[in-house]
Length: 296
Image 1 (cartoon, one colour):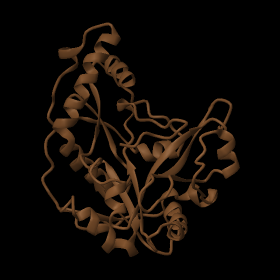
Image 2 (spheres, one colour):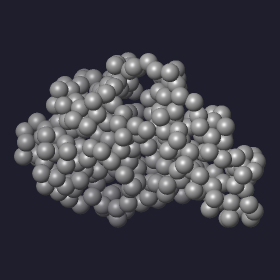
Image 3 (tube, helix red, strand yellow):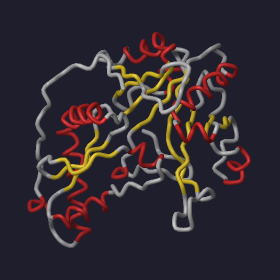
Image 4 (cartoon, rainbow, N blue to C red):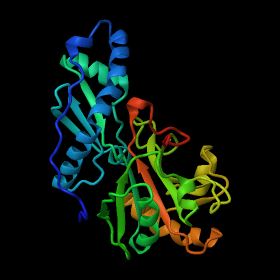
């Protein structure tokens, strides 16, 4: 994976906020309330530390989707997780507040999830660099662009960058002739893997209505008839992605499939498409549901 324009800086130090002994009061549900209040405090004080650490670990491991650190109360790294890869591989993330509180009680030390300050990733075709980066630069001057390491052969390179969530949305891009799609997951009970796994996670892209999109739209590998029968139907606009290539690399498949089709629908000819993935945070009640994952 090629990293471009990444500045080297001294990694900050983890800032502790509490210890298990300082906030633990049985029973578990009482401790859980105190613990829930501590999670945002740790995140606020250590977002930049988490970002520096995740940048280093992603570069060392060549895993661009790493986006969650699990640390103890002293900042010791217990685990690193990719929320995207976990759900793409049909793995649940036991990272709700109750999960983390119970683990803290078992281990007699606080166990926290941390995400980077820039926890939203944008993907776009390299041929659209000038137009896309111009929009991002309006809000983020220190832009660090990476080469997306596609898991399949693609005709054009894909670029990506990491930004803070809730800053650039559909309207920001639409005003500049760009269509934004949000990558997430459906929890689908009709396409379960086994009897022991009552559901599976289906990747999808959702498009909000904008001046470039007359109706909301979706893209996924599911057959349109199966989607309608399931009931979580994107009735207005639906693009089916090739299931085989989507299983190999959903991001690359979605960009190569959606861009040519949307160019014929949008009032702006050859509108670039940008895909966005926000780190999924189960401890904030963000998890795939039948109607999709909540994207902030």
